[in-house]
Image (cartoon, rainbow, N blue to C red):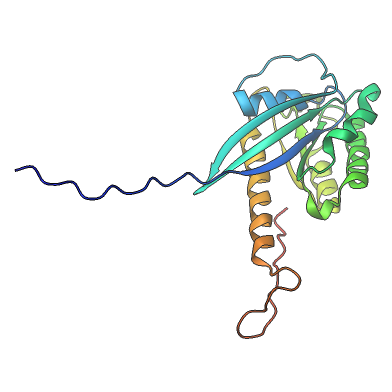
Length: 212
């Protein structure tokens, strides 16, 4: 005899992903677009300079949590400089790119960081400094230590990567996403102004991430 089926269980709607806006900043030809293309499509090709801004999205899973990165790839050319401000306003994360074979590109990255500060409070923005073209070590003008020391002085995350080889590309974006998610969870855990205190009357305290 066939066994009667029990009541069907209601379908559980998948949780909506956490959506974060991320901008790629840096001077022309440091490889911002190549990093984005390698990360989103796992491809590499020589690209013409970005005109204005290009847009990518990438979904990733961090444990049981889904994250969607909305990646805005800004043009590094001077003639588009003023337009780029329109794209990185309100960004929650920035990947600040320089070319390890060009000393001047690290100096220009510092300028981009200052301009990001003018549009956003860096306390609210996760910034990863990336030395791209790590595969060209024989042509290096910026040492790993120089990049690391600058990042530490500004409270930034830091890594070197190679868009050509794909080295550390997925890892750098994943690290940014993890930091964004951690900050969001910490923010949600802190009572808003006017919210009741815990039952023991003790104020809660937000921990500060220091893994840079």
